[in-house]
Each structure stands twice: as C-alpha cells, then as structure tokens.
Amino acid sequence: MALVRLQKYLSAAGVCSRRHGEALIRAGRVQVNGASVAELGAKVDPERDRVAVDGLPVDARQAAVYIALHKPPGYVTSCRHPGKRIVLELVQVPQRVFPVGRLDKDSTGLLLLTNDGRLHHRLSHPSFDHEKEYEVTVARPISDGALQRMARGLPILNTRTRPAEVARIAANRFRIVLKEGRNRQIRRMVARVGNEVVGLARIRVAGIRLGDLPEGRWRHLTAAEVAALWVNAPAG
Image (tube, rainbow, N blue to C red; front, side, top):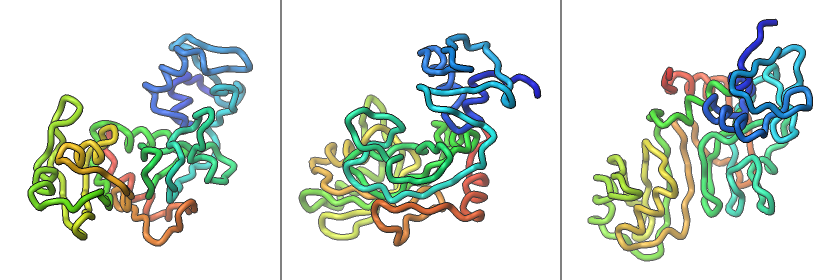
C-alpha cells in the first residue's frame, strides 16, 4: 500500500486535524512501531505500521462513528485531562472517538463526537459557519437592551463578536444562536452586559438537535443527520 504522511494518517483516523497532528509529532507524542517519531516528513504504511498517540493505538481503517452526547456538568471536553472527568468516559464504543468543538466544564448539552478525521477537521475549522444554539439562565433579570447589545455584537478577547440571534424566554432566561465559538464566549458576553451565567445548555449544532436525550446519555447520529453535516461543512 502507498505510504502516507504521518499527520495525514492521524487526521484520517479521526485523531485530529493535520495541523494538530503536526504539533503532536513535534511534541514526541506519536509512536510508530513502538518508537517515537518527531519528524514531520515521516511516512507510514497504513497496512503494516503500528501507530499510536500517547501509547494508545490509532487505526485509520476503523468504521466511521458519529455520536451525539448530552454532556452533564462537571465533565471536561477533552480526550485526556489527568485528575478530571472527561466526556469520553460517558461514551462506550470500540472505536476511538474525539469531541468536535468544546463545551466548558460547567456547561451542559449537545456535544458531537466522531472518529471521522475529515469531518472533524471541517466542523472544527475557524471558517466553519454552522449555527450553535444555547439556552442561557442568568443570575438576575436581563434587560431588553442587554439582549440587543449581545445580538449586535460585543467586544471580548480583543475582538468583537459576530451578530447573533437572541430571543427572550423569561425574565432571566434567553436563547442565543451563534456562528462562532470563542473561549467561554457566552459567559464573557453576559458579563460584559453586567450579569452572570448560572446555567448554559447547548440545544443544537447545525441541524442536529439535543431533543429529549437524557443528560449523560448518547446516541448514534442517523444517516440523514451525518449527510446534513457534510452538506453544511465547508470544503476547506
């Protein structure tokens, strides 16, 4: 079989994007046939070579898996975080899957996981323009003016958030739809208008809805849901 670059193999196996794969290789976290490889130009034979990341086997030939998880609070969206509970502990599949995007430790709701490296890369790419919908509970009643400011965009993290769809649910609850995902963005936006988030749940990613999936449980995406993600993903 033709040799492929190691970072491309990692991406095909769903471990990460090619760029992140290069970082893993530079850090010496990738092993080929039991030996660490730190050379970006290294190539592997997918049929013969044994590839691992941090000692865990990687196989680009495994069947593609697409999962929706209802993340509970207290879990870190990570594949590895010593001393912390991670979302992978909640999903029982033989394949090695990886979270698409993030939900912070205190947040709940819909989290997608997959071992499809191409789709993972496209959905995680900064240019991806899919919608993410959240229900937010704040500590004190929030004014219409504050909701309008969030809808127009606010300065955070040395930039300005993009316009968002914002709709009131109750005096201290609202729904917001974003097309970006900056670090703790909603919490920072709410703080910017003088309030505090006490509950944050993601209820939709693109066309995938959380629905009535119980907290802490997961399900496989349907073929139609997976197809819709590919349609909405950019080609880059």
